[in-house]
Image (tube, rainbow, N blue to C red; front, side, top):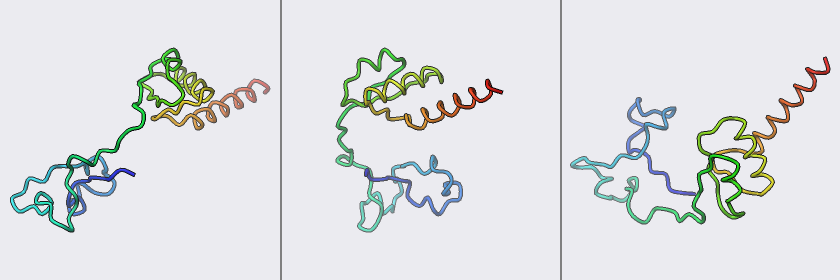
Length: 126
C-alpha cells in the first residue's frame, strides 16, 4: 500500500477535520522551526524522491467501445466522461475480455442493470 502523505497537524484545525479529506492533502512545511521540514525523527515523513510506486501497467483512457477493443488483456482501462448507455456497454465488453477498469466497479453496474431489467419485466406483466 502506498504511503499516505497528509497535511501535518490536520487534527489541530477543525477546518481540516476528519470529514474533510480533500482539505488534508499534502502541503510542504514552510515554517522556520518546522520539525517536519527539518526531517526530524518521530515526525511525519516529508514527500521526496523515492516514494513513488512503480506502476506495472499504464492505464489507458477509454471513451467508447471501439477503444476498449484496442486494449490487450494485461492493460488497465480508465473510463472517460461518458453516459450511462456507453458505460454499460463498456462494462459488459470488459467483463467478457477480462480487462480491469480502474474507476468503475463492473460487477456492481451489471447487477444494477439486471435488477432494473427484472423490474421492467415485472411491470410489463402487470
